[in-house]
Amino acid sequence: MGISSSACTGTEQPRTRGTTATDGPGGLVRFPAEFAWGVATSAFQVEGATRADGRGRSIWDTFAAQPGTIVDGSNADRACDHYRLVERDLDLMRSLGVRSYRFSVAWPRVLSEGRGAVNAKGLGFYDRLVDGLAARGIKAVATLYHWDLPQALEDAGGWERRDSADWFADYSAVAVRALGDRVDRWVTVNEAKIIAREGYQTGRFAPGKSDRVASGRVIHHLGLAHGRAVQAFRASGARGTIGPCVQLAPCYPADDSAEARRATELADVTENTLYLDPVLRGSYPRGLADADREVAVGIRAASRDGDLDVISAPVDFVGVNYYGPQVVGGSGPVTRYPLSSAGWQQVHPGGLTDVLLRLHRDYGSPEVVVTENGVPDAPGEDLHDASRTIFLRDHLLAVHGAIAKGAKVKGFHAWALMDDFEWAFGYTQRWGLVHVDFETLQRTPKDSARWYQRVAAANAVSSATPSPRR
Ligand code: IFM
Image (tube, rainbow, N blue to C red):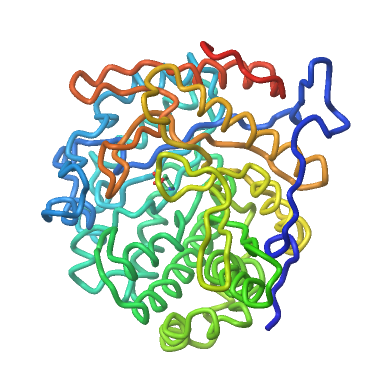
């Protein structure tokens, strides 16, 4: 089987601290001019107001209402109430010196039934949001799909149906027509891997299905939807750029055995190349059937001549979400690096250098934006979140290490601007730079937010250990 990169299957452990030519006094690592210091959210996780102004239902409203789906029994009906507090949140971002805001447009707010009549009030929210960003000198990075499929479309067959790509193209055209004069970057689909895996394999996320063959069809249709959105964007003539958003996890063998190496190659397909190759190379990765036979069957059944030409429509950048690596032994995944309080996240900053350099070396060095990177509060942390500051410092140094070797990384978005509804974990994990009191909705910047503010202002990260109360 041909696996495309040594970087993601080897045991390379890049050093990211103090190794670049641009280290200044005190280990100050400078970033390129115009580097976009950003923060990210998604509509369903922060907006709340799920019944306001004609918003339709989404699959996550339905899923969260089912007993046993969300660990704390919560839902996102109010969340951070970003929908109503948006002006305050815009001011907050400006006060923190944020230069780029990645948000998502809620499809069911814009088209209540997913297609047909545009809901002017819902669209108006994003109109005010992008105006507010422009007024504050913050770049707008708009994700078109961050998991909140309109329930009406799910009832019609959802992503398992080929028409979903048409529905998405039409919705994308509406969004681009309304906002395209003020959006700097459009992100098509957030993390197709997680949609397929958690929504259609494990059933832990909406729509809660467990059918691997169906997940293969969904992967293909999400790719097609991405390509159709790129085409709709190009046809619109709007300014700005467009690209996908992939969650990449470098895969390392747990040991030197042939079994571990083979299992790592297969894991690399389902973690990375299955989502990169169709978009950036116009083909599905070799070895897919060995890596996941049922997914391969689903993809084959869904594929038509010419689809891969659409899926690989040229993009302007690749959005990378990075949370951690996979370490793979002959008999399954292994934990090698410290686990964050997310439970599933191994903390290994060097893995971010690896994935960025892989894109640089193996995929023609596209322009890249880190669209998400972050960690939940460690147990007992509140406003004094030293572990997040250290996490972000180390990952930013890892980004810098990749830039120093030629990767074209143009920006970084910390996940998340503020504590929010963390999907099936409800409000039990706090991922924000800004603390949210979910009773009063009070926002309070944590120490990490103040640290990030100084980094953005200096356009540089110090490799020295951050002082604990900053
Ligand atoms: O909160 C999520 C986000 O919606 C998608 N990427 C991972 C984050 C943390 O789990």
